[in-house]
Amino acid sequence: MSRIRSVATAAHDRRAFLAATGAVSLSAGIGLALRPGTGEAAAGTAATTAQGRPVAVSRRAPAAPLAPYTRGTTLSTLATARPGSGYRRLGDGPAWPRVVRGDLAAPKDGRAARRTALAAFVQFTDLHLVDVQHPLRYEYLRAQTASAWRPQESLSVAGAVSLVERVNALRGAPATGSPLHFVMTTGDNTDNNARTELDWFLKVMSGGRITPNSGDPARYEGVQNSDLKLYWQPEAALRDADKQLGFPRIEGFLAAAIRELRSPGLDLPWYSTVGNHDSLPGGCYAPGDSFFAEFAVGGRKLMTLDESVGTALWKNVKKGGDPKGAGFKEMLRSQGRALRPVTPDEARAPFTPAEYLRAHLDPAHAGAGPVGHGYSQANLDAGTQYYTFRIADGLLGISLDTTDPGGHYEGSLGTAQLRWLERTLKTAGRDGDHVIVFSHHTSRTMRNLREDPAHPGERRHGGDEVLSLLGAHRPVLAWVNGHSHKNAVTPHSAPDGRSFWEVSTASHVDFPQLARVIEIADNHDGTISLFTTLIESAAPHGTNYEDLSQTGLAALYRELAFNAPGARTDLSGSPQDRNTELVLKKN
Image (cartoon, rainbow, N blue to C red; front, side, top):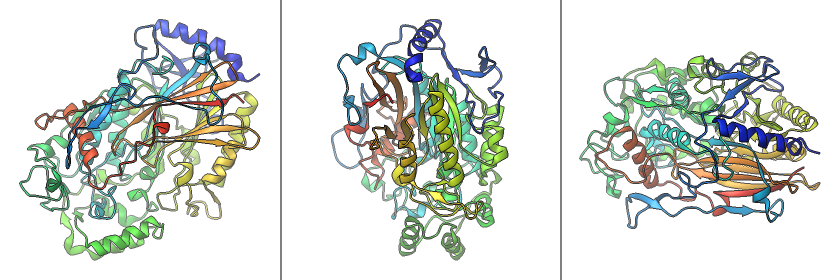
């Protein structure tokens, strides 16, 4: 008998009690391989079990009884463009229905009345909190790729705070009514590997006052007041390329974009997974180059580039031909006369993996806990960014580091991490645990097998090998990831009947700017259901250009993202990739 089945009744009784008393708890993340034996939960946010193990206590559940609901989710409504052409305003649109998927197991009648909720959590991914004035940004490649510069990105912090507000307002889990246990963010939390952005991210998640500005403390210095037609100039009369498409002129936009705002912080414990933009300059170049570090904090910024030079540069990046950024560095050196002066700022310096870990471990950023948000002193000592944590009874979380330090934006795993993952899965199987795996990259974007300079001679392993390993172990229920900025839900099955779901979620920087609630339920008929429900930020769908409040900016963030020239229109995925019930056999 599996452990999930054996504890289902006890878990149900305990959750009913906790819901009635207004609280729910879960283990704070004691890793099986890398975590120390003692807990690291924040003072005031932790308790202990009878065995002395730490638990992180979630926010108070809403007034009982908890029950399935749709309000505040895309099961109710979502931002939709109003009729018209050119630049389009948004309003309330029709909901996305829930789709039942039986690719891996047939859904059985009557399961809703039988099922027991085992766990529920929220996935954030690809927040891309952007220091838009950072000298190393390559906005001038906008003609080559829409991801180089987005009209909305100066409002990324306001948008992320609004997403936190949405999660804090949810009445538990939409499908089962279970209290929410935690939030996991699956990487690309920052955009430029900059200390400014890391500070903003941690304060968005755990609470605090944030001034999304760098350089001159009194004014914006970047491409949006450059008088260059390549970029939307929100306050100028200039008929830039975006205004010619209908983008508005908004007085006071830039001052509002760099004004202090406040995040309430998540009311839930939260965990962190690292992405390529958190580790690599530009999200694609091998770290540690002193030229890039000096340029980042310096007083010069490139805002224009000959299109032929930009095209060649981007083609090389796409095929992974410049992992160390040698060509990028040479291009910057050749553009001396085109560089514009900006205010230098040491806070824009790149952060190292060790600094990333220390920042997470700082009790000042603990929020609702746990201290470290999955990472531990053991990670710092070993120089690793992967770990395990306890989600619930019989359910283990595994967070992977899929960034390749050798460079390029696609990912892979080193042999040491792959072997650790194999050992962890075997232990989980022996202990009767089921497993949810988290990573930044998807299986299809783990094709970068470039050697890690810090581990010469160690092989790198791609998505196919990871899929094979996960499929060989019965405990795995799902692999949850991001990176692609697109909703996708993919079934994976092995010849012997083992199966799991890969759940990839759209980013919060590109429209439709989503996060995902994921619930695990035992149907008590030999199957398990995973429910996925997409949510937007708490900002209203409509905008008012005179409303430059924190909420107004978050709404404008979404509308600008919808209208961003060149942005992909397929990121929502199909109905089968959105709100779903994913059925699989209980192995």
